[in-house]
View 1: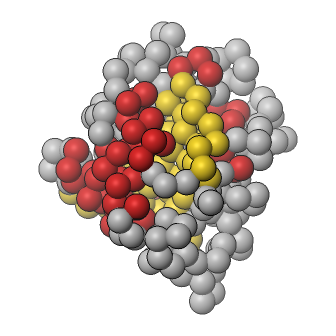
View 2 (view 1 turned 60 degrees about the vertical axis):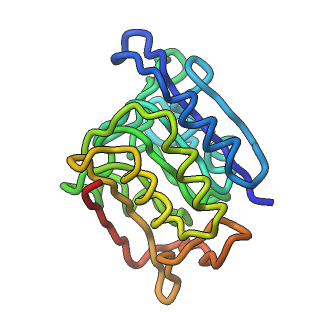
Length: 225
């Protein structure tokens, strides 16, 4: 069966304002989606280097092949920004998983959720999260604007994946059901030649494209919730 990993942060130890619902949000996704539960790391056990490529960036302490790139789908719930995902610990790396430090999909990962603010804001999204990061990854799912601290978005997303919705449609619907209209859902996906990820489903629930290891097209979409 396909594998699932989650990381979440509520306690930011002064790096940002604390949040309340990211544990529920991520764990409801984890416990609802049909698959093998690989890891659940939260608060001080959630580390930026779990998302980063070994030898890339500074400090270059990435361990993604053991964690985020070692599952089929990963779900991050916490603070985000245009250039990084933010964590509550700075002592193991620097507390920021930056786009410049990531290469995803070269081991296993097909889909990743950035359930945090603004990472997929349209301006500059292709050089930020695109060509240097997609190495077999199919989708990044997230938001083009700020989003809110919700406890049930992950569960709604997982239920629709289980019900054979496409990955993109399941994410859009979960966002619409949990955010006001001013919030914008977003996704970024990769194609390679005739390989199209547009109609990807969760494993065992419909068609899944082969990995676009060397993307020739990046496609972006956003819309109002």
